[in-house]
Length: 359
Ligand code: HEC
Ligand code: HEC
Image (cartoon, rainbow, N blue to C red; front, side, top):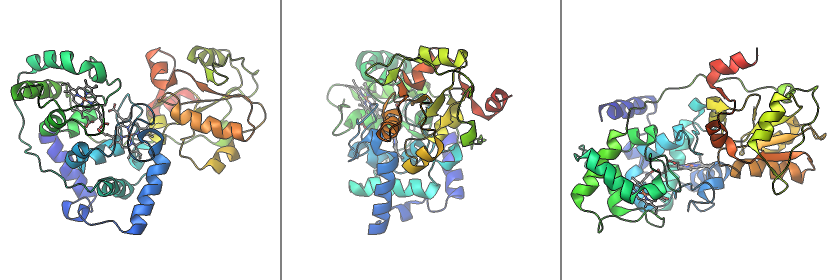
């Protein structure tokens, strides 16, 4: 609780427009249009054209009133700025290597709220007490099918995520459990669970929080186009494509070991590439100006393999574009990078290690 207050305070110091009075102003037509085009470019891929969610990767609805009225504005700001670790939701803030400024993010949040005519609910923010070990049992019985046994998220958001837990207050969690999320598979537990059971579950979720705070990252330089090809003098790899498109992670690993000539595109937001990527992968976010993509990539039968966390939504969109322009040897890593990491395949993490790699 204490940490969160400091964080909120620091944010409002850095970014003055982030105050309630300003947030309640109505956006004008130009602002609405700008927010809409940002949303379509950066977010609709997973959250859907109309903010309904579930277009890809079980991305939640961004129009549920239950969520918007309690997440507005702090939770939304944190989630969009910093993303959620180990999920396809990456950070979009410039500070993490993403494309959006703080004011862009505030504009998006105000737009999301205004689209649904949201009035923020002032929750009672005092900590909720409950029995965490009882809560764990209730959670295992009622929640893990969708949220995962470790709260890692399956078809529903990862409730064990540290950023989530640091910006979701006890009352925010309780509100979600009591009210559900309208228009989504998250039902209300108001009628099926006693109030003290819900408090126990909240206490359990809280006990999983180990702390998180916003730390601007040291950002690595993006590679130059002349560094795009891995092993430029190597031979072309041979891949078996599932459905004419998807390459097994193991075959890509083998191509790297055998020093084959290949380009690997990381199609997630730039922030995700900054955090962790496959060695030699070029950041080519799905939202990048399409004309820029072809400017930099050789159309000469060099194998170009894309990946994302989704595991396919972002990479498919880039590969579809390349194929429409006649790029022949193109594919998508079937498992995506989250599975790649789970399989123990090589990755480069953070700036320092990226430097090591190019030695
Ligand atoms: C590649 C897919 C993808 C893209 C693109 C994406 N998101 Fe997400 N987003 C997700 C997923 C998946 C989650 C749930 C993460 C989890 O497990 O907690 C999520 C969660 C969120 C949440 C938290 C919602 C909640 O109920 O807790 C917000 C807010 C959000 N995204 C906003 C955005 C915005 C705004 C953009 C565009 C700037 C965006 N997302 C782009 C996949 C995506
Ligand atoms: C049938 C699947 C399912 C079950 C079971 C389920 N949930 Fe959810 N839950 C979801 C989905 C899906 C969402 C995201 C909804 C959206 O906004 O699109 C969600 C959202 C939430 C959120 C809000 C997360 C956020 O990012 O704002 C909380 C908290 C939550 N669930 C807690 C629970 C608890 C506790 C239980 C068990 C008592 C539970 N859920 C059971 C599917 C489920």
